[in-house]
Length: 477
Image: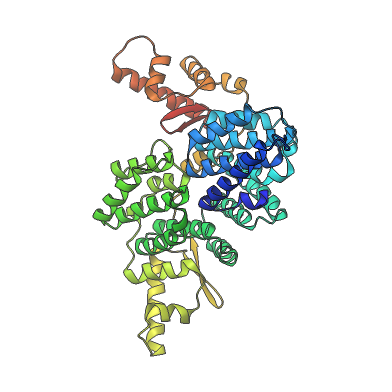
């Protein structure tokens, strides 16, 4: 039988097959009158891995059933193990559901412990820190997300879970980039080499997806397309995973920008059937918005998708086919001048002629993307800094999630502002539910709509990091 550590990092399809085998063994064991042990570590290992499989496939119903089964089970011979599994699965459920209030509540309870992993079974510490980091990521606290992903990586390394270790490092790197204007491509290359060495298709696919994303924001759409197609090839064994669907969603956006409308419509119709809320929201935006002109106003998606709206891609000067190709070539690894010449003009033999061509190409590219390419002997390297993270967007997106008590807000909010805070502190509401709760007296819909918009604007100005909006609902954090 595989160890618990091996189960944690199996690909989704392999995990499901292994779980079916283990479940049959467990059922046979429990039916044996000579073996009356219930609630053993193996039982919780199987339940956790079943929950992990449900989480990975986006099956909230199955994940909820597993949590309820653990809660309603017999008294455990391993109470700490039971509580560890239950806590991690509940946090995973809240993350997948994007229930910010529940995430905040769980984190607030954990912060009373010192350290938070004190009550966690040692073998589950990596999983705990990983999902805790994902929770902070949803709450836009990227500094704490980075710190917890690094803690998860440490535990995975100790347990020799190399694939989980690489995934944690990858997530930490991405969250760190959210805090900076400039993206260091060298970090991608190091992680890509490690993932190739480990033969971890999932991390290779994730790295390529993010490199495609970087090319998209540099205006190198054809390079973004080529890298995205490579990404899908590596992820082809996990077609039901969120990663694969996100890669398809990114591909649909590239088709849109390249005006490949037949391919775009076909892919969007396919993605419309996805069970993942992130994908459904992305599809809806692809169907309704012009990415070059309409800004995103509600923050319903991941940060990468938010930037697609806040950044005006049309303001970038258009790259030539050769410049696009060169950017894509440098994205995957540092290159020497000779390698670039061979790649761009394989038919050229005269050194003098080829040197002139590469000089002119680099000069034109640097005039359009001033700080993107730099020389570090003997290599030319790429530095992505084309994403427009203006200060207003930056303040909104990377603000630390500080758990402030209600008296802080009460001292600066008045009237309907206080009423709004109290409503959202206990639950979440969509826009029209808030109108009914805040303004129960009948007025014209237009008048009440404007009043609530102004109210939300005032509250956001006074408490910029407390009022949040996700998946069509308002939350108070």
